[in-house]
Length: 190
Length: 414
Ligand code: SF4
Ligand code: SF4
Image 1 (tube, rainbow over the protein chains, first blue to last red):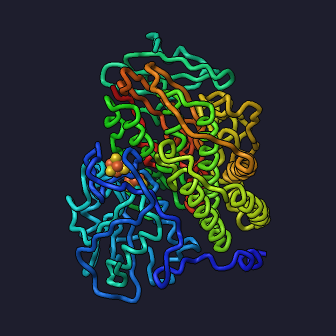
Image 2 (cartoon, rainbow over the protein chains, first blue to last red):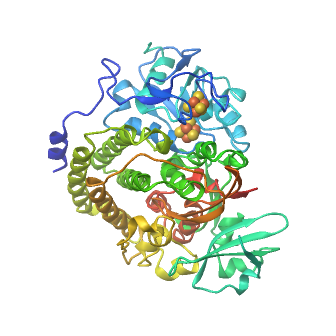
């Protein structure tokens, strides 16, 4: 029965990165210069208090890690609202199926190539973040994911550990997270 | 707010301790009569030690937890805050004897972002931005509660709020089912439920302007012609899928008798929400909260066993009801005007009730209180998990559908 159900639904997986990402676009500000909260493109909370339109994410790749066939990702929550966490978990949903791209989650920083950091670093989580970074083997990369990790509420991830890539969004959608992960591995370029 | 100076030990049931805000000089107690929906405030200069015996949930509100003295075989461990299994920055202190969990206490505060402090003196429209981010999964619930307390939404907007709340309930309940199926290694069911969650979040984005409804009162409602068709398809799919899932003995066995909280435990621990309904206690803020007018003929679904399976059954029935409601939902554009007043009330978030109080003066927030839904439910989890074995832990925790981000948003700001 499960198999029949699957056949009935057909293939849901996005054609990205070989084709277009088919998820609907997020609303983002048209211009950043009038933010009453003084947020920038990476820390914008997409709150809707300025004019918004559907548009794509902003990604900054500072360093890439040498290309590997598979990449292990450690997810580090340092003070999120838990929506970023859900978006990361949804990478395993059939629409995204991150394993087909050689991306895998690992429960320990000791086995991680990439640390995906979510949330606004809280006082109690800053030392945990530092420790997790120290435990990662070389070469390693840190991705600051979403507005909170990029300073929406003060502290940024890059104030504590070196950041290789940043992505905007509150939260960034799963397909956008795929882009930054492939980008940091040198496998995707806008 | 009229808060008499009363020793909290004198307040007897049917009053439940719904919130407690402790500060250095005085503590504010919020009491709820679940039968009548009445709310009462009292003040007292301390939190008496005896209160923790008669109102154990007070421990959750004051973060006053300690593990008991263990047995000779007992081991104590801290699980979290960066443990992959929890999925969030939070922790538990556990006392185990072999595989058995003899005691567990929530270890909170890792996600304390002090968002409430950002709200004070903000214009109500700006405060909403922070309120929506206490817990992303319950963003619509908190924004709706705040909107009703701090603005006066028009009737069409109330219908829009109702639609958004049910969309939020459905995606959260289905996500809980996804996690439980994953815990039981039901890989195909897990994938179907994740796909359904993603589909619902895309519906949210198209109608509400955001996948989790953040800013839904400003962004939406947006034009979305396919809404009813999509909901009908999802409903059909959900009904078939849940029937099939419930036919899986392996899945059901893992949930049956796991993390049981019976009606007596619910009453002693002043528990509301899904864990209460799963134990046969029909506590639901849709009956007594600020939005009760939207749910005029509402009768909560209840079960009797109080275990993880009963909580799942309540969720399945609620998804069925919410999807049926969404199939014919109507809505209109929102218009607001700030209400200069002190107002308070409850809302039923997906896992349980939450309390909020807001004082607005000159269109700005001057006082704010939040007792989030997850905080008393972490306490309920800590009660139910005693005596379970460690392999039950993910089933037990995931059956509550709660978040550390939410629990850590508790507080009162002036
Ligand atoms: S935070 Fe809000 S007001 Fe500021 S730029 Fe982003 S959407 Fe506009
Ligand atoms: S960036 Fe937005 S969605 Fe992500 S944790 Fe922060 S508030 Fe939540």
